[in-house]
Length: 304
Length: 274
Image 1 (cartoon, one colour):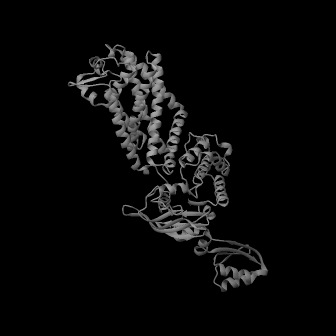
Image 2: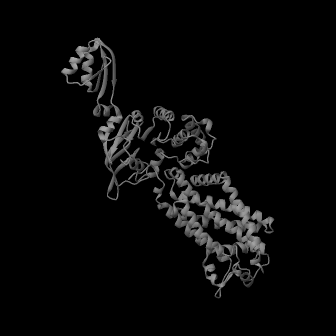
Image 3: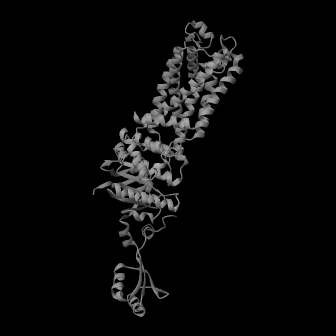
């Protein structure tokens, strides 16, 4: 599949201050892409420029081949945007909000009804279509925003912190919808999030810090590169394993007869498993997390 | 065209659903009609029909004020975030401003028609032709002052500043227009201000139509306060039409071009932390 979003050598300056400094990345069509970074790192500037709201200082940004600086109207047709803060009209009903959106995006009039039904079904809100938006809960409003963002059949959906301010259960529901969407419709999802656990659903992530791109890869690869795994192992040959770990300079501690190794490279882990295969009675492997990747590449926690 | 219509329908729906504002608008109009026409009756002594004279002035003033005030919508839309939905849509800025102006004008016209109907019960007498002419003037006034209102709204960017601006703008203009206090009853030193006030001519044109003064001579019109003798130059009510048209076109252009360039970064689009 091709690259639906291409960003090359993008720089955005406010006076002398470079909010974004020469970053390049691409997003493959039909994937979920996570754009991660601490506050003030340049996330918002980048996403705003991609959404044609801000003008770049230098570089080239395209969505589906359209230049975001020169072909704004075309780009806007290709994208749906769900902002962090609500941009719904509280006095209008769910249906009216989406209908209005269809009018703005010139969805053919005879298709509007079908689109409304389709997107409301995606987020399970058919029953609420006649409810005034101001009467809905925070999570439902977010779902309406997602539905509305999809009403004009965009190729890319931008989600800025889609679960910020929602309770854990609602968060999970929202992520289910996002995943379902991407799987069913081949939609490209470009999201920013603070929550590194949530970023695990992305096929690829970019981490930006101080306006520079510090990592860009699949979460799995990043974890491989920047973190090590932890391993807990129980064996009937405890003395032999203690010897083995000592010989290979692998630090470990013992808890209830369980060896706990906090940090171990993959090949060393595989070797232990191969050597003690028959005697292993219990085994647990914990991969590093994106949070640790984030800490490793930016030197700080995502929330600071 | 479809986007403009959509914006207009949406604004009208919002206006209608905001019952408090809807009724307070009508109530204000009724209060103005009653209070001013009875209190100020004495000021209009010597007029052939003082109540009608004041009613017609008050009607056009409320059209003017409604048009201005309804532009506050856009500030509310900015504050509520809804404006961002419009700004990122593939709609041109000029379409957004025209939609806002037309919806504020429509609401102002509605207010004016309600006032005319109330006026009818209070003794205002008009026929169909005059009613149509009055509607024409109300539409013009609505568009002209919605443009001014939207212009002020883009300058103000928050509702408090907007209300202060409107107040500063509205108070002297309305009181020096002859709508509430007939210009013929005003002290002479105020007259230069009356003459440079565009609303003066709007009011006189509206009165000229609603009071059916077509048959009167220039001298009679001057005496009735709908034509003005400014140092020998006689300004007839028809000048009012030209005046609104000019002010309207000027501010429409000004407002659309300002809106085109307006920086809505106050419209906080995604979080910015610098």
